[in-house]
Length: 349
Image 1 (cartoon, rainbow, N blue to C red):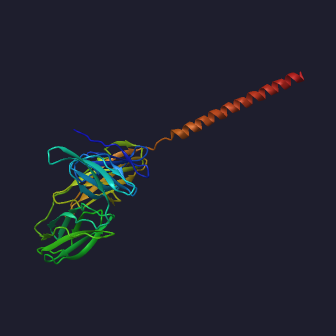
Image 2 (tube, rainbow, N blue to C red; image 1 turned 30 degrees about the vertical axis):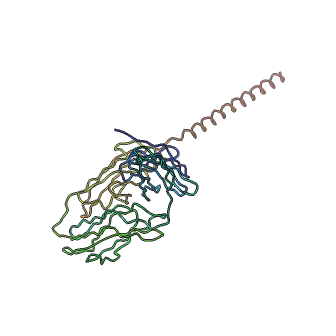
Image 3 (cartoon, rainbow, N blue to C red; image 1 turned 135 degrees about the vertical axis):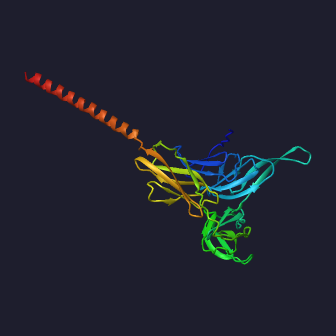
């Protein structure tokens, strides 16, 4: 198994970022894991570069310059020619990298790319798909390949009863790439497309899809969910941990939730690849996760871990030294007192 690990890059807060195969790891300055997110494509990566506004850039073996927000969201990607070197960032925010390309004579040319950030609306969401079932339609898509020069703000869901006649149905948060429409009737045909918005404007529509909800299409198959970290029966000394794992379903995963006690649940980030931060209590903890599909089927998994607080050895050492110093001073004072007392007694005699 070949493992490709980049050199690190450090952001303005001191966090360390490392590219390794299809993931980017961020570490706290003390070396503990802060976050991990998967790169969309399974590619080996170059050394990352981080801009002042919190964008991480890297090139890859698939001839693409990627720009990711530090929370793991793809901002845009730029297709280049040839084999790409690592990227650097100029004072004005321009990203530079070198590419080795074949010329018309069969030789190699070295090209310098300079890629800037244009203030544009995002490109269209990619690969919109529709899954229908009993009184529901599930939409699933991929993020735009180009976000423009601003963060994405929201997706707009358009729906209509005939092609080309769609109207805005709903607005959803940008961290979702799925939408479950339960306000539908079995046997009716529905047409959908979606757009993405940033501060500069709205993208062009995605591809159009159609779906017919069907009462006979009843899904009874449960999803699968797995916790990849932390491992079962782990002994941890960090109170805040990043729980992460994978989930799958024969149709789709619409939600992954976590719980530390099996009663109070909260939403994780992501679905098929998910993660969430948890604060542990001292002693034994049981972490529960559940995956839900469009039909409402649920699967739950759990791991048992033990959290023990770190003993602050620095404080203990300081206290121990203070005690030793106190004892030494006490004995010195005691010896001085005994010497003075004996000397005075001899004078009296």
